[in-house]
Every structure is written in structure tokens, then in C-alpha cells.
Image (cartoon, rainbow, N blue to C red; front, side, top):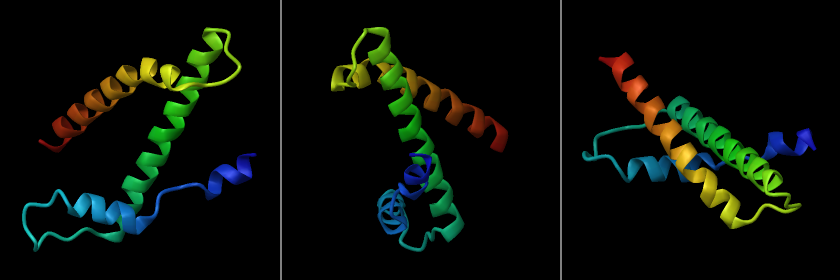
Length: 93
């Protein structure tokens, strides 16, 4: 099963287009390394969401993860992303 997880990821082209859609100037460019980094961060984020959802389902004695389990852990993920981005911003100052 671990071998299958290594093949799962996000397409670099999709991430590049998504990030570029937020650029304010057409001259802004995105390096290949930046795209790979964001792809890896998204992969970790999704994996963490899956693990936390599974733990939530297990804590409710459910054999299957449902959308309600994901919805219950979503504030935890949003909070951890927010605090990490604040910490990252402070490191850049």
C-alpha cells in the first residue's frame, strides 16, 4: 500500500495554473522548484486530512470515513495552516 501512496500527487501544470491565477502582474513567474514545493505541501496536507478524518471516524466507532468526519477535523487543519503561515511570515520579516 505504501508504494501506491508514492505515486499519488498533484499535476505540476495544475498547481502552476492555480498559483498563477493569484498573481497580480503578468510578469510574475513561478519556478519549477516552487511548484514542486507547493505540490509536496498539498500532498502532506491532504494526507494529514485523511489521517485525522480516519481517527475521527474511529473515535466514533465507525468503520468508514464519511464527509461528517472530515467536516469535524477541518477547523483543526485550517487553524494549523493559519498558525504556520503566520510563523512563516514572521520568519521572512
